[in-house]
Image 1: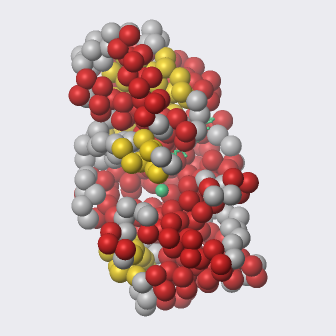
Image 2 (image 1 turned 90 degrees about the vertical axis):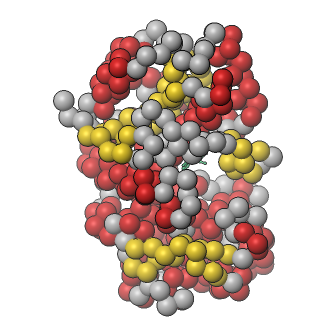
Image 3 (image 1 turned 180 degrees about the vertical axis):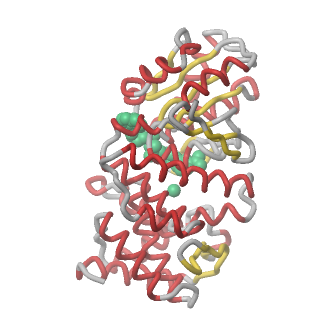
Length: 363
Ligand SMILES: NC(=O)c1ccc[n+]([C@@H]2O[C@H](COP(=O)([O-])OP(=O)(O)OC[C@H]3O[C@@H](n4cnc5c(N)ncnc54)[C@H](O)[C@@H]3O)[C@@H](O)[C@H]2O)c1
Ligand SMILES: [Zn+2]
């Protein structure tokens, strides 16, 4: 049986071509009253049949479906699921199997962490973002009043089982979305991973498999070293301070809404530039990073009049306590430095640099 298991601190992450059969055995070894499956309409259609084919123990499990998309990360949706579980007499020993992207694992993890003060759950990520990032690490939550992840708990799943063939039904845009986090993992932690992802074969899921597994392992290693995000885990915030600002800004004009990873890719260009500007990163490394990211992700156009709003949106970010900006920056490809204080003027310079870069279409 081809299975590998690594620890993410509070839970294992399982890979390999038999990761789903390993899930069947894991469930068989647990004492639980009844299992329930949570997915969204897409993941239940594209991935559930394959899950059930490999995990026969779940064949009788009732299925709960939510609508696809971020809007399902809502307390009203949680209420519906809590109510359904109660109606089906799910008790404290029930098991929730979450099969889906980050929306399903964030939502399902939160439901599991709160129903009857916490039941066990297992995550089976189906999107690239889920496999390398969202499903790993025990952070769960829902959005509130348009603000992301405002309500949540840390709730480790029993395990995360990664079955990369699920990616075959995922569209190219969603693959690129997850790829941004894989690139980030390389930049902050593992130069070799950054180099190999360079030729990421997005059209060939079998060839992508080892890169996905390495990236998930990086996330697991970082989480294991800092399970409650008190220090080291902040390396994962690289690209996210400016990225979140850009993401929120793009949501203000619905016709050009960016996916999270697309915004983070832009954030990484800006923050790599800041790293160079502040004397931490070589110009050569910055150029290599910007060239790779600009080739993969479409440019985001804005005018300098937008800089003010972008900075305001970044200030709302919970990472920027006390109005100051604290960035995770790079000191080399594969090495990050957390809690670097940056002024609003420097952030503005970085935005301006990116704006001119994509307007002129060159480096
Ligand atoms: N908890 C964490 O540490 C963490 C980390 C990163 C992101 N997140 C959260 O994850 C969410 C984003 O995750 P996402 O990008 O996976 O979004 P998502 O869950 O909305 O999935 C993206 C889309 O792909 C579809 N899909 C998923 N797998 C599929 C498959 N195999 N085949 C066909 N379609 C499929 C989904 O139905 C959805 O329409 C955000 O809410 C974000 O806040 C959480
Ligand atoms: Zn992210």
